[in-house]
Length: 181
Image (tube, rainbow, N blue to C red; front, top):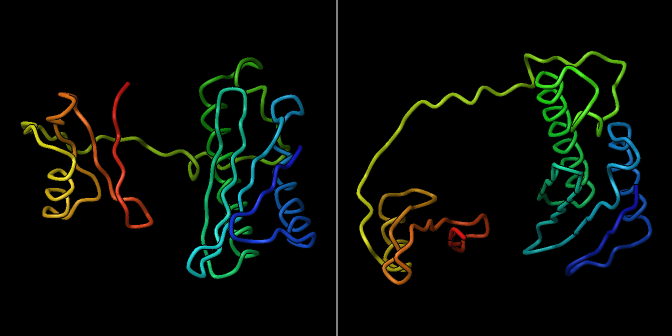
């Protein structure tokens, strides 16, 4: 697997690069060679927090994980663990859906160890449906309404575009807007 490691507000030393590559190489056992071309890794430091973001593009699945901690090495360990859980989760879903050797399942190597299906499969149970009237408003008013109700997102009818949009609070404390194409 080829690694594209870059730093934002941090110098990527040889020791750090070697550590990241060594840890990410743990994931190679899950992939067939042609399915993974390049893994993108971004290391950054913001306000004393060390963050690592890893993106692994596969044929029909995009694996992505991000972790932040006080130490870049700890962040790397955490992000590799998160990616490994994602891979096992996807593999379990694929194996339960496709019983024959074709399609998306061919991207992952078959490990000799048994996978504990009961722990890895999430049940997507819908527990509540909510209906409400979308009041036309601008983005600033939607952010104000979201903050007033104490939610991390708010769906509204955008008075400027006449479309349904969603505003949300990002992990950095700023706001984002989702628009449909």
